Image (cartoon, rainbow, N blue to C red; front, side, top):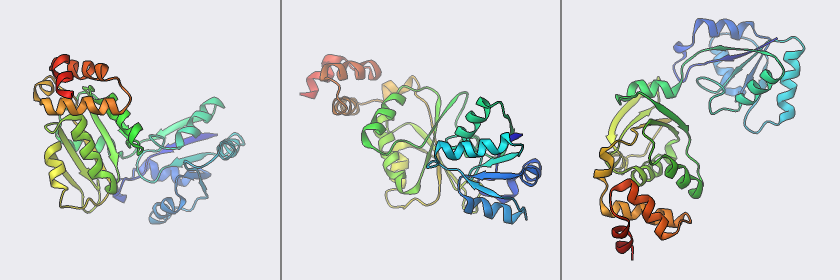
Length: 272
């Protein structure tokens, strides 16, 4: 009775591993985020296995039905729509429950968009933090970006095409227009593309171009030069953003002064 975490291709079918193919054939059933997408993968490799749907709207009772089948002696493979399951993915619930019920969990590694984008970026990466998708709601989104403002590690984000322009504009506002970003599109697919920009250049590039495909954004972390690059206008914009989020003007000025190098009094007087 084992739960197998099975990595699948992120685009190119040839990226599947021999071990992944063997395990997809050997397990008794497969849990899939979207059975329609997984069926295409199985059909491509002529694999016939029962599929069980498990996604972000599934209930705990649905998860326990799967766990009960494994406890009953069946082996289960879990896959996501593309790449490695259980990372920013509902499959993590099944893995946690499996551990709690003393079920053996094994991993069959495969392609991942985040590490592929990191390798393609050309950015010096000693440490990175995976942020997944930014929140959609403006308040939560601003709070997340504010938390990341002083992050020194490289930050990796996923983004959908219809949200890319707003995300780049928000990043430019919070991180400054000179921050370096690598934009990876349609990884391993026919129209794979990697572009290296400053945030200002990225925003300008997409002013007249409609984004298409799925994106991974690799953003440089904060460095010592970032403070000297901040203009008074940008620092005041940061102060106003904090005030909009509920900070007192004096506290907002104090926080931005620490980051930007401007004096608190200078920011406060120009805010009036």
